[in-house]
Amino acid sequence: MNRSIGGYFEWEFPAETGSPLHPEAVRLNSARYALEYILRGLNGVSLVWIPYFTCEVVLEPLKRLNIPYRFYHINRDLEIEVDVALAEKEYLVYTNYYGIKDAYVRSLAKKYGNKLIIDNAQALFCKPQKECHQIYSTRKYIGMPDGGLAVTSIPDNSSALPLDVSYGRCTHLLKRLELNPSEGYRDFQRDDEQLSNCELSRMSSISRSIFASVDFESIMQKRRDNFAILHNVLGKTNELTIPFMDQFECPLVYPYWIEYGKELKKKLISKNIFVATYWPNVFEWCKANDLEYELADNVVCIPVDQRYGKDDMERILKEIL
Figure 1: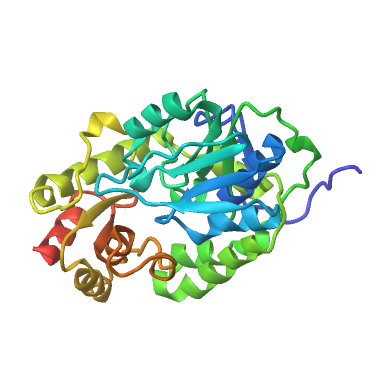
Figure 2: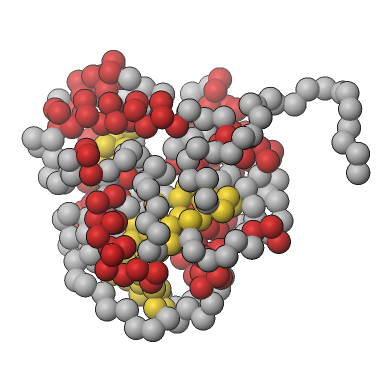
């Protein structure tokens, strides 16, 4: 079919010349489908170990593929509490929490090799480990209607997958440009829910164009600068051990664990400083005295992303202090 000539203009982006970030990745429609892509490629998975402290969407591909799973606990350093011994055809998923556990990821890769699946949904810039498999979510770092990456040694057969069509999931992105975040939040929830009802697909043309147009070096530097400003002040009272910044590439948020975190989250939100709770499903999976319950309840995930700078961080600190 010949392409159309003339007519109204579309949303224009720079010509795609290949993304400088994870060029080897298979580009799919979300991180949950990136996990499904890997699990399908592994063939005959008997069991998957997953952390209690993770997003419930991780279960979606496991349920779709009828793969059994078991939970494990983490410790106060956000690391595996008790070593998991993997039997044949068993795999372990570890979450790179808040994008600050890159060094620990490297140690796990050496230990578990190709039986390890790193969930880098919160760590877009984490360098892939060739020994294992990893998934990424582009949407947590960049405004995109869909987008997930799979970096794996499994042969690439993505060309057989359908191409996602995502123009109907752009409403929240457009509203965020011109309105307050709260006015587009229902659209965000609806658009995110639609992804759960899709099928494993290649990343949409819209998202591929957005991904190829992003200045990743600038994003990384701004996030690291903002993180450092917060940590310089809050590190003294943070119950969470934050690794030195040379041990991770780029954070998702600044995780501030404090006894009254639940109340602090409410206060910040009332001041139009929107802090997410990762993850509400943990309150159902865990007991009130479990560490994961405490983390979900009282870790304040402070925005450090590329839209903000020093003045914004100082405003946040003023409200906290």
